[in-house]
Amino acid sequence: SIAPGTGTPVRGGLTYREAHLACELIAESGNMVSMDIVEVNPILDHENQTGKLAVELILSALGKTII
Image (cartoon, rainbow, N blue to C red; front, top):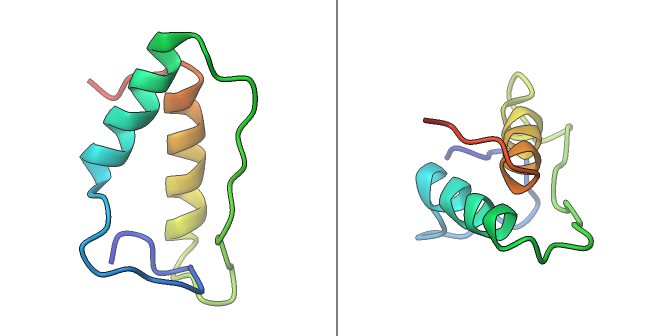
């Protein structure tokens, strides 16, 4: 899994790119007023992989693009 540090893994969830695209579209809309990052559990994570992904998604939602 791309995000192993979660207490509720979901088979068939969003891919890395789908999650970034969703966050990029939110940023482009200019309508985001708050954001809540949940289910990042460092105890279950491997080498902070999920934490790093959470930071990347936050940055995308704030306007940073990955391409």
